[in-house]
Amino acid sequence: MKFIPTAVSGAFVVEIDARSDNRGMFARTFDAQSFAAQGLIPVYPQCNISQNHRRGTLRGMHYQAEPRPEVKIVRATRGKVFDVALDLRPDSPSYLKWASVELDAARHNAFYIPVGCAHGFLTLEDDCELFYQMSQAYVPELARGVRWDDPAFSIAWPFTPSVISERDAALESYSQETSL
Image (spheres, rainbow, N blue to C red):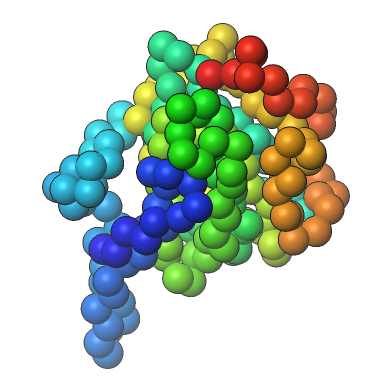
């Protein structure tokens, strides 16, 4: 596996090292030792999937607050998405910066999103599915989010979403006092 740093401190694109032959392809997609050697969280007690029917579906920007903030490893298992990590850590060198990666099921790449970052994505084609590894169990009362289109971040989405939940559309603009 390759760990490629992004503009967000502690966020990495994770690429596989595929071995191909006449049978097809084989690759490791996760190895706790490799993650730990990079200084990354190696334990993920919860996994989730997100199915998205239509191109232009936006989910985000979500995070889980203290005392159970979460690391996410996100991978497209079907389709392509524009995936974003947004740094909400006031003490981070990349505070209020964002990084994006095109997650593509055909490339088998992933995005490691550290604690203190909000996460969201926009589907680039119909019928996308994402697989999440989560370092913490979901705690509904700690669920938080910020607007996907907040001018404080100026995320350069590839196009305007056409499908967004009422909850995500109603998220507040960012305020440091109410964050993390």
